Length: 300
Length: 176
Image (cartoon, rainbow over all chains, first blue to last red; front, side, top):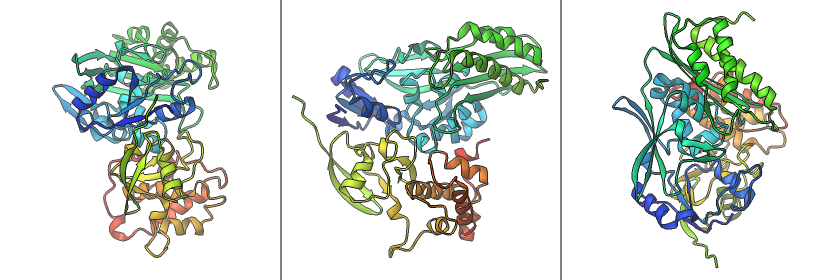
C-alpha cells in the first residue's frame, strides 16, 4: 500500500475540500470492504488483473462516519439513502423493506453479515463492479444519485447515466456520492431480486436480476428490469419491459419477453461461468422473477 | 520523497483504553495481535471472506483484516479475550461450544463465538435457518457446522428469561 496519509474529515465540506486539495492523489474510503483487498493485493498502484486498476492514490479521505451522508428517510416523494449508509442498515430498514423490497433483498444478498456491517451503498456504486448487487435493484427503481464537489456543488445524475464502462463512472475524483434518491414506488408495484452465485454467502454474482412490475388485475402497467454481471455495466432490459407493458402476463408472455434480454447483455466467460451459461441463466431468471411477481405458475 | 503521517489513535479494547501511534495503512488485526498481544482474532484469508479475523466494533461484528486501525479510532473493540468474566469464566456461548464439540482446530472459533453473540443479542430465539444465515461469513473447515449450530441453539436456551423475552429487533436476519 502506498498510502501515506489518512484524513477523517468532520464534515462533508471538509471532505470535499480535502478531495479538492489532493486531486488525483486522494481516494475516498468508507467501509473499505472492496478497497482494502485491492489495495493490499496491488500495493495500491499496480493493476489488480483484468483491468482492475486502482489509481496511484496517496491520501485516503474517510467519509464512512459522516452523518450528513448517512441514514435512510423519506422526503418529497423520494426515499433518500445516504451514500455512506451501510448495506446492513439498508437490508434491515423497515422503510426500505416496505417500500422498496427489491433493494432490501439486493442488499441482503451482498457479502456476509460481516461485510454488510461495513460496506456502503455509495461504495458499491462507486467501485462500479459489473456485479455490484445494489446497482440493478436501484436501476429497477429508477434511482438518481446526487454527486457533490467543493467547486461545482451538487448535481443529480440518473443511475442509468452513472455507469459509462467497465469499472468506470461519471463520478469525478473531487466528488462524493452524498445521496441515492429513489422515487417512492407505487403501492401497487412489487419487486423481486434474484442472484445466482456459486455459494450463498460472499458470492460474486454470476447473474443478478432485479424486476419491478406494477400490475392491475394481471395486466402489466409498468415494468422495470435490470441485470448485473452480464455486461461491462449493470443494464436495464428495455426490450423485455416494452414487451410486458400493456399486456396481460402469463407464463408464455414471461418466457417470450425474457428472451429479449439478449438484446441488452454481452456476458463474458470467467471463472464463475461461461458467457453462454450466463445468457441462459439471465433469460431463465428474468422469466422467473416476472412469473413470481405476477403469481403465474411456470408449467415446466 | 514520501513521508508518512502517523496517526495517534485511541482504541478501547475489551474495556481498556489504549493510546497508539499507527501508520495510515495499518490493519486493525495487526494492531490487536502485534501491538496489544491479543491473538484470539486470526489472520485467515486476508480478503474478508473467511471471518477468522472477526472482532466487534461498537458491538457490531466486522472483519479486522480489511479494516484500517485509524478508521476505528475512538471506537470500542471487543475481541474473544473480552467476552468472558473478569476471572477467566467462560461466556455461556463458549461453554456450549465446548459441550457440543463445536471446536476442532479452533481457528474459526473466536469469530464464530463473536458472531453468535451478535445474533443472540438481536434475536434471542433464532431458528436454525437464522443461525446458519448469520454465520455465513465465518468459514469452518473442520466441524461441518452442525456442532456450531447446536452450540448456538443451546446457548440461546440458556439466555436469562428477561433477555429471552426481549422483543426481537428489526435486523437483516429477520428479512424474508
